[in-house]
Image (tube, rainbow, N blue to C red; front, side, top):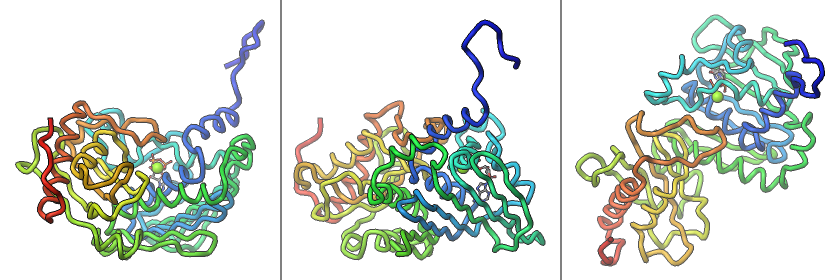
Length: 352
Ligand code: ADP
Ligand code: MG
């Protein structure tokens, strides 16, 4: 579009638009880590190794053994709004099961960092490609021998958006956010071997053998893992409501913390927070927990694809249900019956 005469209103250049938009998707290192781990999971990886330096501000590396990409895939993947995951709006309406679908993560991360992707498709004669991207431009695409799967490296996040870079907190705080993201996905995918390394030190690694209890142990330690009890309710076990199943692990009431941090809840495999879910869990424990104490929870909720709107802002993890009250009652009932079965509840007043 040519500029319009006689006005100060003008079109921003592409770089400026891309960097402003990037700030919306990538708020801090943990948001980039989230997008990259989601991509690895969507690529059906069975192993994902996350390495960060300086809380993720200096380096984020996510290496997977997933589907991988060809040279052409790589060139397409870093462009704006390019995805292999949905065709159009109709796929969103019927409920997407992939974690990504917006096609903006690689493009936006690449706009505010130095990005290097090495990838090699699974089971092909393609031996691999390396794409280097810097601040929004493709620098090079070259053949490069690499293992099957994908290695994404994000260096110097926000180097070209100093205001955003200044806004970052301490290394410890940024790493805590990274740790939470990787932990959430490691717990939700016990069949994937997930490791997290910070400044050369391994923080945890799961085996990928498919056992949720073992994943909890890898992440939170033996004491927490041994206090977990199974929640497993579906169909007729649940009061009426949108949830088709509630499963996972919740801790003995005596294993608790003074933060909500360890309430890991998921809807259709997607990590979410929700007042209704939290209130349902807390309602089940009732007075067994002291004030402001929270259990360890890894809880998976299944709803029909079209009953939950995943088309929310990428940064927002909060979900809302049409009928929050019913969800609260269903979660409460599922967790309560697990606690009761293990004799972990005193008799409680009937709920109103
Ligand atoms: P989205 O995940 O929403 O599709 P992204 O920008 O995150 O958008 O990724 C763009 C595309 O690049 C994906 O749709 C996928 O085809 C490909 N891709 C990204 N990361 C990986 C990966 N780790 N392994 C295989 N393919 C990937
Ligand atoms: Mg993605």
